Length: 69
Image (cartoon, rainbow, N blue to C red; front, side):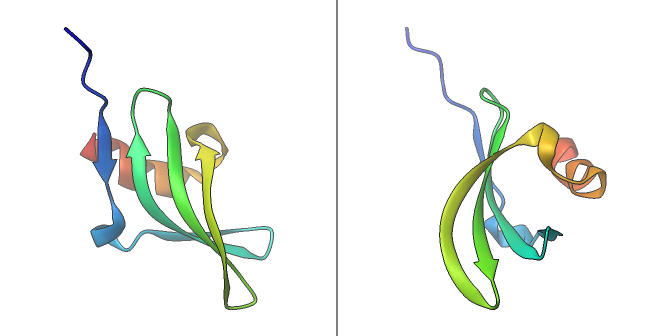
């Protein structure tokens, strides 16, 4: 039996943070790979969807995401 991939949708939570003048909106959290999928914005323009390791995001955002999983 295959293991169930544990992805948690977070788009409805409106979690937003900034790193190096780039704004990120959290879309989902993959508990197995410990990555978050984010929508990146730079100068108000969408830059696309990216994956960021959970360890590289600000502590305040981690505290908002981790209790959910």
